[in-house]
Image 1 (cartoon, rainbow, N blue to C red):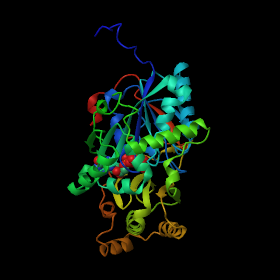
Image 2: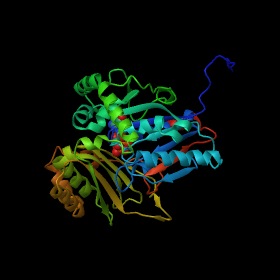
Image 3: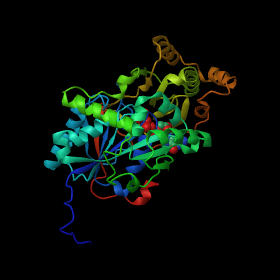
Length: 407
Ligand SMILES: Nc1nc2c(ncn2[C@@H]2O[C@H](COP(=O)(O)OP(=O)(O)OP(=O)(O)O)[C@@H](O)[C@H]2O)c(=O)[nH]1
């Protein structure tokens, strides 16, 4: 053990907070799922925030610890001064009362549409929070293949990149070299100084992104400096911080419920047609489906026109005291006319049977959901289920799990 030198600066007793951000579907939940199994994550509290009336993300993050505190909220950047502060107050209160074991670090996963500036501002300037927590870094995930276009089209994505201390380039396995070059050209302008790390399927050592004491105000790109100044001015005037959502059409979220089991191939083909027709307006689609012939739910995920391989959960999540086995699909869309939303609802309410669907698929070789039709649906780990938007999930407080569990 090294001796503490009395001339060293005093050790900061505040709990470090890492803000994990990235545009819709960039891979934040995937990364968190990998991180929480790592021994270095012991004593980390997770705050998860979702966009949309029906939360899905927190069902996909493995609940590894015993303690979970639920806090109501909407989108983090729009309600930040209320709910984020309340979330951190609750966490601190529970720690002070010893209702939960010691927390060494907090990780906040923002929604894919969150503007991180008000989040960082709250951590640094809100009196209660700043006295107990300190911002330890902003880690921004960017989809290597879709990133360049997302940055061109979405102010939220640009702010997320502009605030980053580390940029994690995800899904490099799906992107070609020209996509990476186009993305690098955008990142060179938006945030040339943040190191870029390639991460595939969330695989990265926690020490490369957490606890690094990264956050360095003053070194922000000029455009971001302006956003920060606006946020400060609004906060001083007692107004809600101006978020990136003000700069362009607000994304809209709607949910389709399925009261009965769905035929998988019929559903896959209908979704493929929806993605092909409306993909450029579909920022994100994700949900749980009750598929005919399966006793467990299937997680489906799409980002724009890309449909990811479906994943089978081992069992239905609990809602309150009962199991709600209704399928549900959350759409987050931008600039999609009402008529198109009606069309999507209609197609999903009237799914073709499997035989009809397979015939349709045979004449549509470019269907984005082709991978769904031949999916083996691997089983994912355990999941948790709650309906509120905010979660504090204390990860593996106490003893660490053996490293082998991470693989
Ligand atoms: N091929 C590939 N797929 C990935 C990778 N990382 C994530 N994915 C998939 O991308 C999809 C979206 O990933 P998520 O982790 O849910 O993304 P997110 O950022 O949490 O999404 P939102 O919460 O909607 O913002 C999922 O189907 C993941 O399995 C990767 O490195 N390679």
